[in-house]
Length: 316
Image 1 (tube, rainbow, N blue to C red):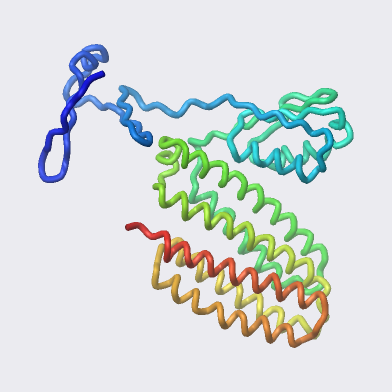
Image 2: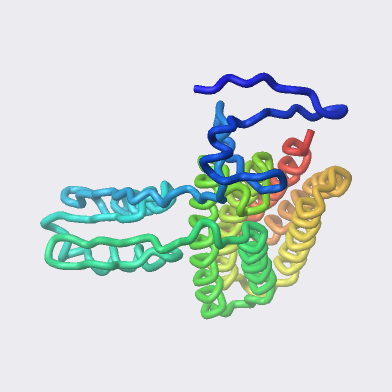
C-alpha cells in the first residue's frame, strides 16, 4: 500500500502523486491520459478506459405451482435486475410455454436461446453502453402523446381503441428497459457516464418513467371506455381530453426545460381540469362516464407529480 498526501494546486484543486514504480511499469510520461473510476469510497486509476465487465449472472425460475401472473412478474424482475441469462424450468412448462415466450420477446433485447421439454433459457443482448436515455424517454413520451390525441377522436371506433392498447404495450416495453438501464447506472459509474446524466438525473428520469407508464395505462382505459360513449356525450369528452393533452404538453415542456416557473404554472392548471371532469360527469351517471372520469382524474394527478420532479429534484 502506498500513502500519499494531497497537495494544493491553484485556488481549488488538490493534486495526488502516483507511485513512480507504477509509472515505470505502465511506461507513462507527462501528458499521458489515465482513467479514474469512482466507487463509493475509492478511486481506481488505470491506463485504459474500462467498462464494467458484463456480469454473466443467471436467474433460475421454477414455474411449477405458480400462477402465470407470478411467473411473468419474476421474468420482468430478472430482466430489470440485469440477469444475463433467465432460465425457466418445471414440469408444467409445456402447458404455458406460449405465454412465457410471448412475455420474453416483449422485453427489449431479451431472446430465447434454448428451449427443450421442461426448460427455456433466455438471454439479454442489451448493451447498456449503447443507449441514449433522453431518446428513450422522448420515444415513450411521443407514444403517450399519440395515444391521447387518438383517444380524443375515437368517436365510437373500437378498432382505434385496440390500436391504442397496442401502443400501451410499447410504452410498457420502454418502461421496463428504462428501469433496467437506470438501475444499472445507479450501481455502475461507467454506465451512468455513458448515459450522459448525473445521479440526480437518474432520479428525475426514474420518476418520469414511472409516471409516463401510469399515464399510458390511464389513456388506454379511457380509450376502451370512450368507444362506448353516446353521440351526445362526445363534445364534452373531446373538450376534456383536449384540456388534458394541453396540460400534458405544458408539464412535459417544464420537465425538459427544467423550468421551475413553467412547472408551477402547469401545476396550477390542475384545478381547471378537475372542474372539467366534474362537468363531464354531469352528462350522465353511468359506468362509462365514471370510468373515464376516474382515469382522467388519475392522469391529472400523475401530471402533477411530474411537476414535483422539476420542483423537488433540481440541481443544488
